[in-house]
Amino acid sequence: MSRAKSKRWEKKRRDRRRGLQKTLIRRVSGNFPGQKVIVGPPSDGIKMSDVLEEFVDPYREFAETQEAYRKLLAVAIVAWNVTLFPEKDRLSRLDEFLVALPKDVRENSREIIEELMVRKEKFFSRHRRIIIDFELADTGGQWHLSIVSAAAPV
Image (tube, rainbow, N blue to C red):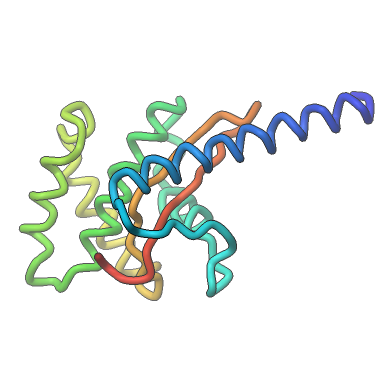
């Protein structure tokens, strides 16, 4: 690939990522009116998108399409967020979250979510940010994950 072609390709990928970020910010701003959405590096230097990708890594091979990966991420985020609640509240919170999932994702998800909750506690307990929303886009040969998170459970 020529240098000029490579630069155009990289610019297209950057533009796609920026568009993805703007879409996510608009959606979150609409869901939380009056709340400021801050874009930039996290104060602790740890990107939640990287953490979430590591969190789902053992299950990644089962998500061969972008849609399957999106469903895996949705289920993983439910597990992640439920685990942030006190242990005594988790089962009732899990029921609430399950109702909010799309029907095709909800079916047979409970067992996987409970497995992921154990994984969250065992390997990711120091990460306490709640995941508010995410966007997944094909940026030309790879998927780009953007996450909106909050410093503490809302």
